[in-house]
Image 1 (cartoon, rainbow, N blue to C red):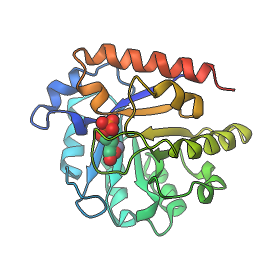
Image 2 (cartoon, rainbow, N blue to C red; image 1 turned 90 degrees about the horizontal axis):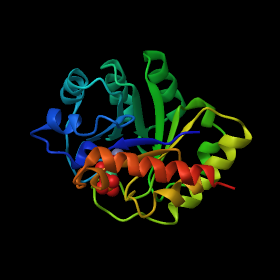
Image 3 (cartoon, helix red, strand yellow; image 1 turned 120 degrees about the horizontal axis):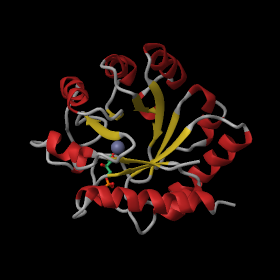
Image 4 (cartoon, rainbow, N blue to C red; image 1 turned 180 degrees about the vertical axis):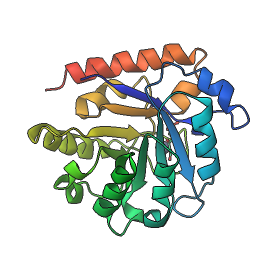
Length: 223
Ligand code: DX5
Ligand code: ZN
């Protein structure tokens, strides 16, 4: 199993996305944080920007919706052609129905849970999703420290994915850097979002490579 490194452009220069996308050309996917100032106390961008981003990069977009009322809005992001659309379970009345809708449009469907949301309620339905995103910080801002307790949820989800041999990506987002990515991989993640750890590096491509090597070493040493 290989590790995916998805740089979060929340830490990019919002006036120079094209230049910054070019600096991460060895990324697996580009993680795009959509925030509405309601679900989280921060505001980024919406549909027109996500549409435009796809025209300036050949990379698949990993859209992370931190917005309310996803049952109404998430489909629009899938309709832009985004490769993957992840919505928060806390913002949906029916996550399974919404995932089915996203898949029918042609996107990979992801469900995200905040640090305070238990994972147990989602384990029986994992096959309905292409990705489970376990938030390792409170969503809203880059540059926070990883909340250790969230890794128990990563391990619980990994056990279920392996037992049932599911094809579900297990993503972590928040506070991931070179000091912890290996043990987060050991805990069970295979898809890693990194914002500040990538964008503050002198050589971003080299940092992505470094993070991927550490993650793959962690995956290899899982017990
Ligand atoms: C936070 C966002 C993250 C953020 C991560 O709510 O979902 O994607 O960019 O940033 P770092 O890697 O700096 O914690
Ligand atoms: Zn994110």
